[in-house]
Image (cartoon, rainbow, N blue to C red; front, side):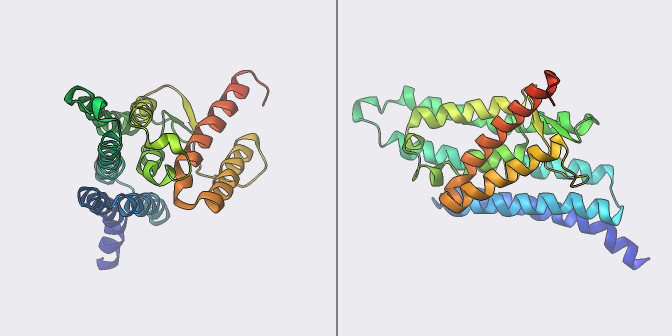
Length: 243
């Protein structure tokens, strides 16, 4: 009986570790270490993957686990990347010409808090939608967090990502994508056959590996952008019955 009880707590423990990583990320952002803050999001994403996997392998899925997972994701993939972008926007703001540094302009930076709000909406929808297995509806919150959280790292390679207005635009755009009707490919493989859906998954993974080899941590926004484009292209071909 003791073993059974311990087994039941493993997935929820991993979920709580996901949440704790989100807290560490937020703390790192407040301390000005944006790279470390982004890395904590990656660690949170690993725990997020492992909690679901362990629940399925151990056959201990539960409603409380499902709700706890969403609450943790709001922190790690909603609040944490928002703090990174907000701090980065502040840095970009003070790089603007002095004449452009007005209180009115800085007020726009608060729009990034759409990210945690719409992340919560997206996760609530996911919890009551039983059809999101092979496809997601809207940008998944972990993907959104990796895009936004690594914008400062990607700015070393893509110069426009240190522009206040460009970063703000991306933050708002990706917040809206969270609750958009766009179908996004799930990377959960049921088998490894060369079917159209799996080919799209392999392509996403290949693009991710190549970009990471070239740009390292700065690759994450590029990888997620590629993921978005491949998903749109794949589902467009599916609707046209090309695939």
